[in-house]
Image (cartoon, rainbow, N blue to C red; front, side, top):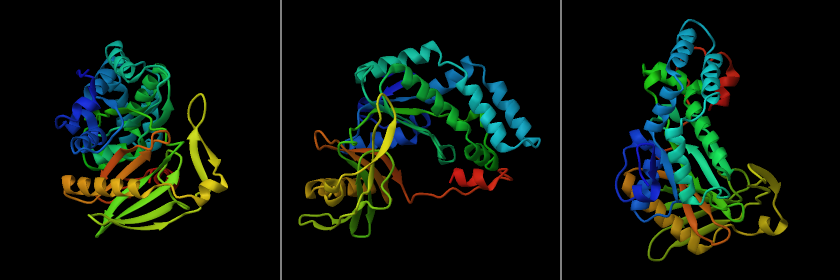
Length: 327
């Protein structure tokens, strides 16, 4: 089911997508799927859906007024929060909601675990974007889409658009809705090409990219792959919290002593990393998740180029804490 407001990711993988309509995240995942890399089933809520939400709720004047007040001296954090509050007070229009719910039904409907993520159109809009994991009802999916729409007006994104002279009212925020990979039973991590090796990091559970204590691997892809392994202590993992959300729990001694990935897993991730680098013609970082029930690996996000650090270029974000929060 493809429409003005929804594009199915599995259908989108058959043809190139316009990032201005589905956002960078969805467009990149579709490109990987076309290369034979496994990505979770799902759909994009398009830029047209965002525009219809803003039009139906008559949010344009509220956005414009808040921006005028900011330019007149109001604190950026206050103006941005005012806009986000206006978004969250409104309902998704029926024309958009019906298509989102129909697409969610195709994934399985109520009881089906999905992740909802922002899929920004520009890098400036993609700072501190919202991510919602382990959603299991249609109502939760709609609410998460509305929150993603509102995240277009976080303080750093607003400030960066001001710095670049971009029209705040022309900004849009597509949304990605995909099946959750049950990585709380498996693992998550990153894979990134580096010189002749692919560097892989892995930890048990789902959610955030692994940091301290993660397993680390170096894989030299090829006919006779070379794999170097370092087993981290992996002291904690993120798992589903019922009925919704996630929580962090300690890992067992057995999990701390075991490697998250097999050699076959590592060879698959290394092959995918090489394919992604060649396709995008630049180094990429792949965020992946492993289904703990089937053992299948999925790429859940691709980030071409080095991971950027936020540079605050606009005048006075009011406090150092705001700047730090959105880095």
